[in-house]
Image (cartoon, rainbow, N blue to C red; front, side, top):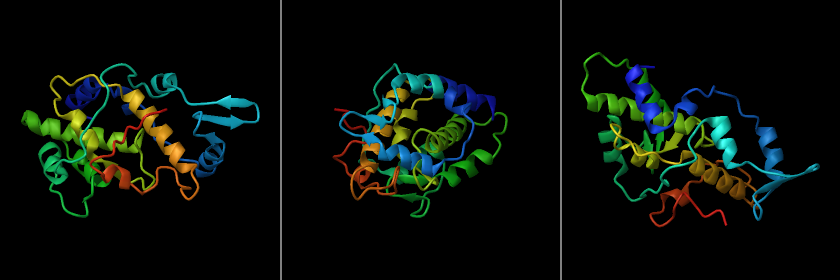
Length: 210
């Protein structure tokens, strides 16, 4: 990875994710844990007692910040225009469906080597593609494994002096939300493809944990 991009990744606070190795998902193990999840307490009820995933786990295991500004974003933007401006990718109905973009198109952009002396805007577009793909492959992974929500682009607008966000809190909230949805009757999938909630302008992807 180009040093100019890595510097931006560090500034954003996602250096830990960059160093996180790819791993296969054990669907049977995840299903077993979902069956023991209790949404009223946000804990797993296991034979030896209750346990849960904590904010400290986000910081220690993933190396992402748990302190900083809360992540609050709009869901009513013109996503195709936002992607073209911020990512430098020509968008169509296949690449972008609703508010979710194909990760493979982000990777294709990243596979193009950055030339020396390119404009700063090009470096920033390249970095956003990499970071968005990284988020979609790790803490905000979709069950389809090939799309990521473009809402996170709003946190990547200023890459010269990016705000320090609490990615750990958002990650934990997202995980709790998906676990609670997955254990509901009629919703057997974790990180399923039903993203109707995120398509609504009045629904936040960051629900209360109460």
